Amino acid sequence: MKFKAALYSMFLALFLFAGIALAQTGLQTTPYATNYFSATFDGPVDVQGPVRSEDNQSTNYIYLSSSTTASQRIVVRFVDHDIAVDFTSSDFYANDDTVGGVITNRSQDYYQGHPFTYTRHHYTYNGTEMSKRTRYIIVNSREVIFVEQFAPFVEGPYGTGDQPQWFDFEGTLNIK
Image (tube, rainbow, N blue to C red; front, top):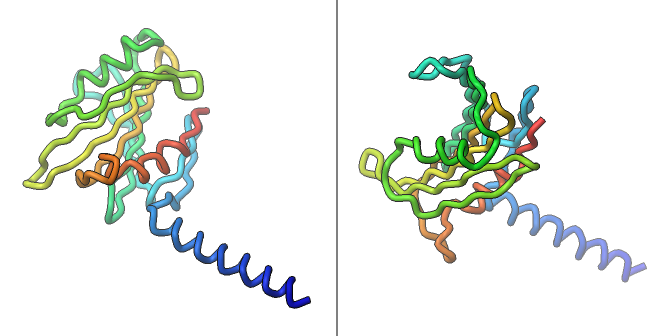
């Protein structure tokens, strides 16, 4: 009987320790779903849109969440004309990013079968060094999803800084 009680106490202590450790990594807390995606943000979500693009060739729906450590945003863009469902389109959006600064990481891959281009920008905003991580995902010939996180630029032990929070966010995205 003492063995079971000790085992139970050890399990409870481990569970509590893991819960505290996970809470300190910035795990996302706000599940959110639309007809186009579901994801878990770092805080309450504000919806903006529909908003026409400056060139009047697409409509954006913006889902934004801000916390004390980062701003996270998913933009669902509906394009008025067909675009290529490949890396040329995701590269087009990545190359069109006007945040400036230096691209410290860039890659291409597939997310749930959809081509994407990823960038991480290191830039300065109002005197603060910032990081902007973005996945430009081509869902189909008329729909694009941008997954973005803005956070203070911090070099972590592996040069990653805000990477764990980014992985927590972008890893919850489910394209519908």
